[in-house]
Length: 401
Ligand code: AMP
Image 1 (tube, rainbow, N blue to C red):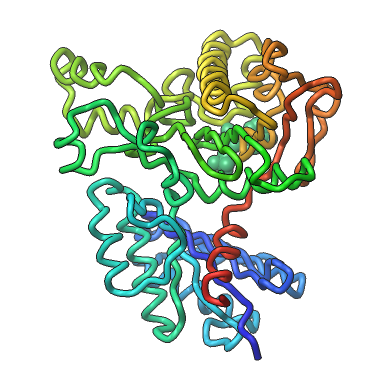
Image 2: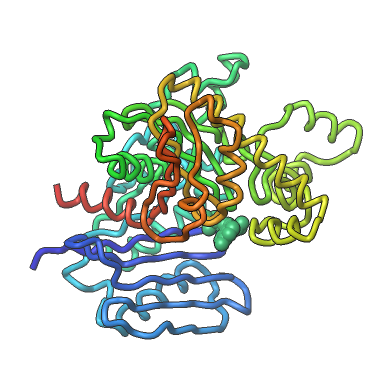
């Protein structure tokens, strides 16, 4: 029997998201989520998709990631999809930070694990959870290839002038301070799917990808290769996000420290968790913000305008970086669903060849689709992202090669 299944694991600090896929047809056999790991109120939601089974929910304390993955294994086994199956080809792990060294998906051995650990100082929130997920999965099936798919990998092609901050080179190099970028799996997938939608090869198109979820980033993809992206050393840089500020004058931090007496940790929390849309208007959900705007709420309107203004600036910047743009692609929770955001982001850019067809923009759907006006020089597309499928595809390509 050939092994064609990939288990994709996305391990966060208190959660594990998982999907089991069959790579013969990229179908999903099961999907699920373990939440609030380490709390009394942990929850596992498991949905078997192969036999059209019903979702199951289990509530009760799950102490740690090991217990969480064992619970996932038990749920899969109950559907005849256990981790002991010879059909399982590999586990694909989302790893947030791969630094400069990991430019492609990598089979995890001790050396690779040590390097991911070495990167913890630049990804203190994410890499430790990813490492735990890898170790626990390896414990459950030591014989199975564990593949790391890095959020940063797609951006390692950025030219040095885009990746470097204009600070002292020796200090930057000693502490590995540079722009890495994130959401790379999504940018890779969406830029490729956009080319497909245009009926062209990725090598032949230049795309601006706007990944607008709770976290948000833009990227400039030239002929299938990333040449710039808006997130930097950490996911804090760039666009206005659900709870992150995105770009600001770094001196804001000195000011808050010196004048407001805030500690570095307090400022970190302020900029990562209490800023962006939630800081501006108290809500980070774009549905709620547009609803409030409809009621004439000024704070929600200002938050929306700041969000759009930043987004427009990045579209303009990446237009200049690319020189020629074939398509702008919207993806992730906001990009796929918020027609008002797409309309506002593109409004006034007719001179750049960008114009929407209002009816197409209003249509909801699961499939990649064009929303630009027929006369527009640049295609505007909505391309639903699928990071799990991309992780599974990359992991499977590696182990089946
Ligand atoms: P993601 O991080 O990609 O899961 O995106 C989550 C975000 O997408 C939420 O915080 C919402 O702001 C946004 N979102 C989800 N559904 C909709 C919708 N129907 N309309 C507008 N925004 C949405």
